[in-house]
Image (cartoon, rainbow, N blue to C red; front, side, top):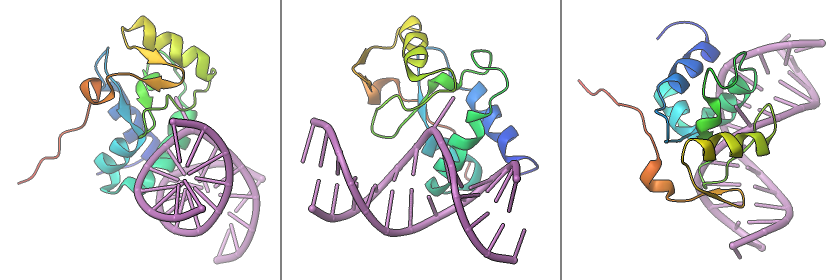
Amino acid sequence: MDGDFQEEVLNRVKQIPRGKVTIYGAIAIAITGSVRAARAVGQAVAKNPYPIIIPCHRVVRSDGDVGGYSLGADKKIRLLRAEGIEIKGRKVMNFAEILFLFETLSF
DNA sequence: CCCATGACTAATT
DNA sequence: AAATTAGCCATGG
């Protein structure tokens, strides 16, 4: 697909429904086809120009840890809880239940 | 073009 | 189960 990697990332982030989360690796796979670009995805969302508006707080680590946030991890946790997501310590509860993954069109 | 950086991961200890 | 480690990739200097 076209253009800018960061733009692709933000487009995916916008698709994450309220009350759910996805992981960096899932976005990496959706865009590049490999989980290896997960770290680059983190770099991209770190520069998110519109936190909250673009819900990058719904992107967490593969192990269920909330991960980082430009406005601070604690802010990220508050936002997620406000959306009905339960968090214990730094871990997302019911992880598998609320995990959102992207479509893999196979023709 | 080479090098460092980081909101990551998987594997290992 | 928590901490380390090496690997990977898109940026920016």
